[in-house]
Length: 470
Ligand code: BG6
Image (cartoon, rainbow, N blue to C red):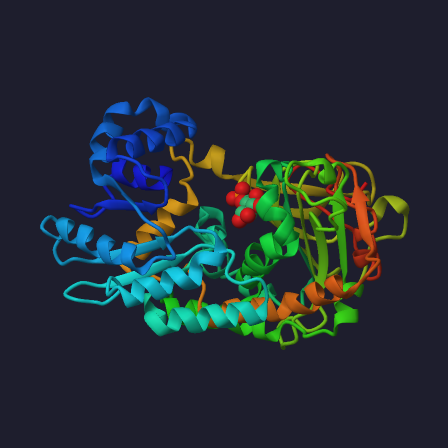
């Protein structure tokens, strides 16, 4: 709703667009508008815009109904006819931000009631995560969706793809000719992707305890970031070109046995998780994951991709760190002072959005003493008057405009589950799993260092923190 409101304030919503909310509680339009105002107000600077809200809220209306009852969809269809007077052709975007157990019945009811039939205007559906719990359930859901919608009508959302800094990965890689020749195993030694969160599961334990960090973050957000770093350059920016290149990366991620999946992963739980409201007694749901993955293709053969994410960690930081190989022939390093540090390129996605490039320089007047220096770019100082928009603004606008390039295709979803399924299965089958307990406010379990130490690497963050497990 804040994203829709922002789009309204920026005059980026189509003329005559109406937003119809559908949920179980009985409520009047006015009560619904007040409820939305209360929640939009939580988003800081939007609160002062009461007058704009008064205009915007005219677009909102509310219909009470049950997602599992076909009759309710039939009457929703009748209600929607009222809006068609103002909005021609009568296009319709369905936005399913609902509990996952209702996806299949809702999609079925959209089809059976005739609401999803394209009569005069288009029909599209946006589907929020979680999209399945594993490969089997995702395949079933894809089939159910495919019974009602064509693939080009389906917009599976991952809000990470709507972040400005995630899109900047494409610009950074493909608008700057200097990086492309370096972007392979010939020059890159390893890649780290960190998505650390300082928040705990808070009041979301009911959902989270059933999902855990692998389903909540790794299968979607982290693997999407990985594809943006590792994909080959697409021929153009069209949805099929970009998504095709990303799918190639997911398909090339090495398939591992259940045992290998566990060996290449460290899972942890923050101390105190079991006391959170809504967590099952003795739950072994992980809130932290660190993984080592390999991409078996010509570009990335042998380059480890380290992924880590967790709740209740030291800071909120999302960063992709590329570590380059050392020079082929070493002229320095004859003394401890002349040690060479690897070049690091760090793409900081949030909260201090920017880019860091580390290189060695000679310390003046100290013989051959070397020091690693950091060249930095920060969005905040470079674009002082331009706030970074909410990811959903862009995604909702793209879905309204029919641009699916930042949404997930059915084969992506299935490939992503193929990658994490062995791990989930091995974890469920292990009666005494190695669940590492870590302190809230730390960098996660110490054991995660092992994944990198095998290759002589350490966890790092360029954006102001060292980021090693402690
Ligand atoms: C959501 C997860 O998809 O992403 C949350 O369900 C997580 O658990 C959130 O906190 C992180 O998003 P962001 O944009 O704050 O990095």
